[in-house]
Amino acid sequence: MTSSSPVKKYVILIGIICFPIAVWFYLITGKNNYTPLPYLGNYSIDTSSVNGKQKMDTIYHTIPNFTMVNQDGKTITQNDIKGKVYVADLFFTSCPSFCPRMNSGLKTVYDKYKKVDDFLILSFTVDPDHDTIPALAKYAEKYGADAKRWMFLRGDKQQIHDLSLSYLMLPPDTMKDVKQDIQHSPYYVLVDKERHIRGIYDSTNPVMLDSLQGDITYLLKQYHKK
Image 1 (cartoon, rainbow, N blue to C red):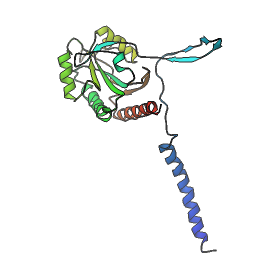
Image 2 (cartoon, one colour):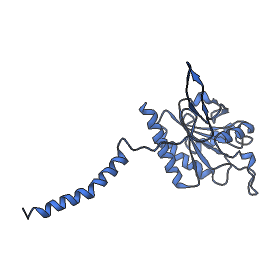
Image 3 (cartoon, one colour):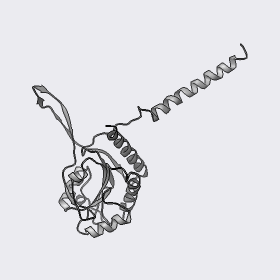
Image 4 (tube, helix red, strand yellow):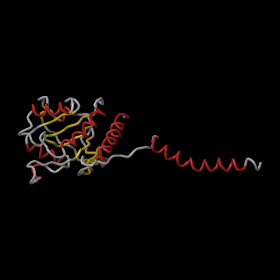
């Protein structure tokens, strides 16, 4: 009996050590592992009544309709991206500062999710005067981007201004810099299938690219479970 006592003590000790590790592993890998993504932007509360019963719904900020042209010269509207999770960003082809790094990050995202049918990347040029369809096509080719999965889009400046606001970014025509005439926000914006903004990520911070990819994976999983 006495010889087995130390063994029992070791078994108990190992159990005490391993139990919290096992719980942690389950929380990380099991069914309870999730971090719900927020809905960003202004929202309102609908308190209308149906059949005499009052209901209360939260109406979240949504991206409005738009009409743009992609690198293939095809007109793109919200109908063309309906039912898609997507990442949006602002750029221009001659950008000398953070655009190359920003789009290199998106190239990583593109390569990871390009076979996912309900995922897209939308890159909106803030310099439509110079970023013609041929210029966008050449730029897309540089990143190996298929227009069905990664669209480089151009529209008029007023529409870009309005879309920037809807994506919760500063419009490029309101930003001034002595070093270059054109400025824009360096953010990736994650949008769900209902056109709600679910995340904003600073492309100048390398850690944010991992956060973006993790949130894309999470959001897609939520839809694929339905």
